[in-house]
Image (tube, rainbow, N blue to C red; front, side):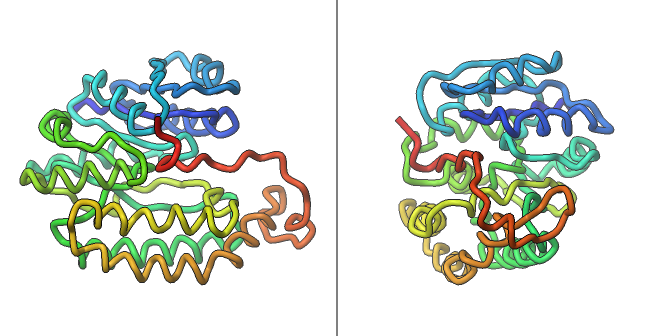
Length: 281
């Protein structure tokens, strides 16, 4: 079972090296790794090019939806995996993905999020897992895919591609899941697929953060799906938890691996993560 890993990239030089190093450390080597540069102005292309197992593509149309589509169309593996540039795959991720797709009824899957660059990471992980489990039960045949840790069969991609939305203002990974399930495909949440992801999404202003959070129920609403109501509890938790979560992110000391008040007030040179639902041409 050949597995292609696709990584859409826009100005991710700071994180891409660690992402690719985690792929290099897999116990089972993926069939191919495709980095799709989406008009980066930093050293992302140079970082990708420094790994000899990477195939580098360029997508001039701005937006992760276009970069994703370019990578998926070129991928030749039986399974097309999709991660973000700040994703750190567990060393057995490829092996576990193979195990998941040994079930012929599974068309697409996404897995667990484990957060890094944040103090009290186990708390974040536990809250996130609670809601993913809860939503997978509530949504049933409307389970979403999560672009930082997901995969689907190439046949499923070819089947769903003509139906997909190509605009901003929605989660393109949710869109794949919604249309695939409308075509009779089976999408699952499987805890065997484990990946670390950066907590940097929280490090933006409150209104920008909540605008991003609201895209989840809005994506379901734009497709006329009542299941969006199950997302409201997540929205409420994000709204209430924004301030302490951002403080835990800003106050994380990577050297001591703990919270430091001095870090909270230090100026940072890190660029905020671009909102993939808004940055679409």
